Amino acid sequence: MSRRPTVIMPRWVLFPAAIGAAFILLPIVALLTRVDPAELPFLLSSPSAVAALWLSLRTALLATVLCVILGVPLALMLSQHRFPGSGLLRTLILLPLVLPPVIGGIALLTTFGRQGLLGQSLEILGVQVAFSTAAVVLAQTFVSLPFMVIAVEAAIRGVQKEVVEAAVVDGAGPTQLLRSIVLPLITPGLASGVVLAFARSLGEFGATIAFAGSLQGVTRTLPLEIYLQRETDPDAAVALSVLLILVAVVVIGLTRPRTAPDALR
Amino acid sequence: MRTSAGLLAAALLVLPGCAPAPNAADGQDADDQHTAAQITVFAAASLDEVMTTVADDYTAASGVDVEISSAGSAGLLAQLQQGAPADVFIPADEQTMERAASAELITPPTRRIAANTLVIAVPAGNPAQIRSLQDLDTSPAADSPESSPALVVCAEQVPCGAAAQQAADAAGVTLSPVSEELAVTDVLGKVSSAEADAGLVYSTDVLRAGDQLDSVEIEGAEAYPNHYPAAVLQGSAQPAAARDFIEFLLSAPGQRALREAGFSPGDPG
Image 1 (cartoon, rainbow over the protein chains, first blue to last red):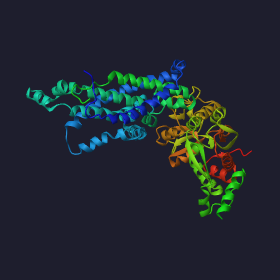
Image 2: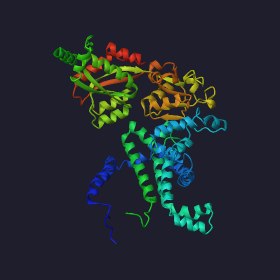
Image 3: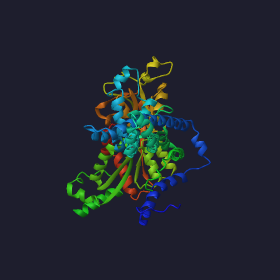
Image 4: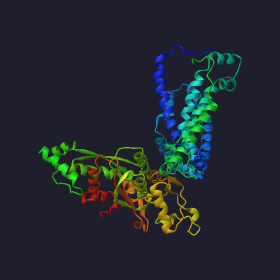
């Protein structure tokens, strides 16, 4: 079965679409042309680069797990539960999507910092978030959580009412419904939420630098290392950028959500 | 009158080091001169505010418009290497200028227009009671290495980080910072929010941060000042005006503005 353009794609669309694609691809190609393949292994195996990559992978993974644990229930609540101010709450929860990340970092500092809203209580408990890897994870979770919420919320809204109602008739309770009907049906949406949250966490820069600091192996993630290398060694910065792109491409490729069979394509 | 204003501007352009004419700032004439010429100055981020002041004075005196583009020194250098058009380059350290020179971006000579010394920035009121660089020592020989205050510095790749390392070496202390920031502004942010107890920055940075920060002098820091070099760029379309602007920075009014912003004198010679 050959796939033909559907009714919603007139031919002229190809023109702006091609420009759009080139706008994204060209800078990436330009970056790749600046890399000397012979020097790449040397540039990428420096202790600071390895430490930054390892830290980035660990923290982004943790942040993604936190996004799943917190984001899925949040999306369920926002999509199913109407209460006074629920619209406002939804708007506020999506705020990190549009805020410059550095503002998120400052906000986290005024919350979890030593002089922050919760900082003093945390200090009494013996927890110091400042300048720790935990601060990096918090920053990444803060900026990534809205992506998870949006993806899962859209998926939940797409679940067909009849399916759920049929299960209710069969006597399924809410938790059972969630586990055996809703969660399996929203898996594609959840998967794209995971990809978005992980990718956003991996690329996090502004909130991290404003909130967590920058110390090799502790808080200096790959984007921070790239920015720092740019100061003295632009070649190393480009090499690390390519590495970050490779990781991102692998992640997106591995978890790309499959299109539903009856979706418009 | 219009012609004479234009002539005056032209005269200032061809006379390097010419003192500003006292009556050139008068309203209408000054406005008229704006079309005479324009130069673009790439200046280190720490010079941003004072450069705006000096540029206004210079425009009033010479009729040459000055556009200031300020960012981190390395970022500016990268822009210049990619062919950004500018007339004057003033990075925050001499290493950056040397790199610009070896990339054949500038026309010698290089002039030192100002200097800066390293200080310990502390949150207002100095809660951790830091008195000297020795209070930040974490070497086993220090009084109490285990209860050291939270110190933030610039990473060694950034000019202020190299200076911090130099200061530590000169004082014979070992520093164990909790963070090595990417820019001086990040150090200031961590200290002014009292997230860190101390940070090593330049004296002018503390002045710019207002009343959220206090500074503690580092003994002997004057011995290794950080110089701000200025040079005309190879690609300048207005090399005479660019040279003249650098002379203005070294002249009495220029040096006064820099001194008021907390900078040490440049090297007029």
